[in-house]
Length: 142
Ligand code: CMP
Image: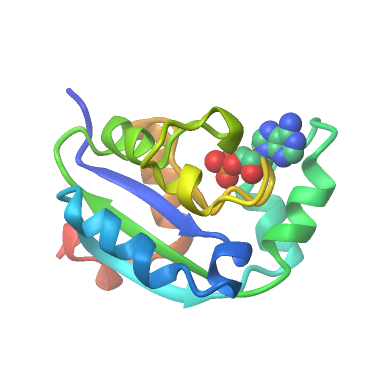
């Protein structure tokens, strides 16, 4: 059965450009409930840990640099079929391939600065949610 939560980050580029509000509106209008949210900044070490699965990739170091370059907004989003539905809302990883009307099509600057992150599986949604939030900071666990 598909899980009910996914984890998103509004990345430093989108935050810097003032796109946090419009992105949260799109999330709301698409029927997701925000069950946890925080404005924070990843240290280099935290960004390395969050993206550890990409450690061997050529873009890993610059991804870590970018993700720790400024504030982000992390949130747990709740909805039936949350992971797949959110990936549809945000569009392809590379904004050049993202469908019209998706968050990345509207707000991404490049493949690396692609406005938002979304979990790629139910398993990773749980791991990534635990990365940012304690149980008493999220209504899905209260
Ligand atoms: P995200 O959904 O946060 O998951 C991993 C991130 O790595 C991805 O979004 C992109 O920002 C980035 N990424 C993936 N592939 C590449 C690539 N080929 N070059 C640069 N960045 C990439």
